[in-house]
Image 1 (cartoon, one colour):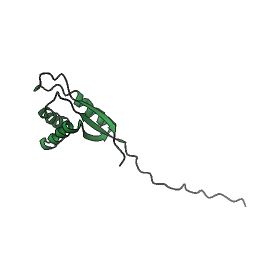
Image 2 (cartoon, rainbow, N blue to C red):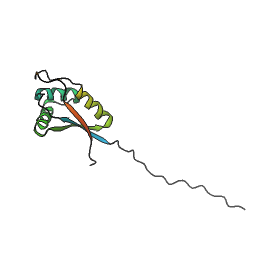
Image 3 (spheres, rainbow, N blue to C red):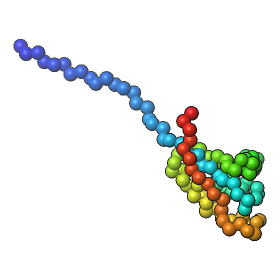
Image 4 (tube, one colour):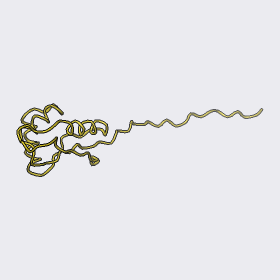
Length: 109
């Protein structure tokens, strides 16, 4: 009688969903926007309260840049674009447009 092969189940491996890479939205300093503008913009674009937004305004002024969000690439691009579209600071006559922001990969922790 011929032997019949018993089907063996493939070993089950547990797969974990891959996390999307994260990106920082970095606000860049300039001399054409007031703290009030930065606080207002961060409140409207990110929903930050005044104390948090003010701390970020101080950091961008002191260091030249501040990470304002860490998120997925798609959301980072949206938030960067919202910063760029926010408009000029009406408190400073020479101000001609929005602040600048860039996106950079977040370091793997």
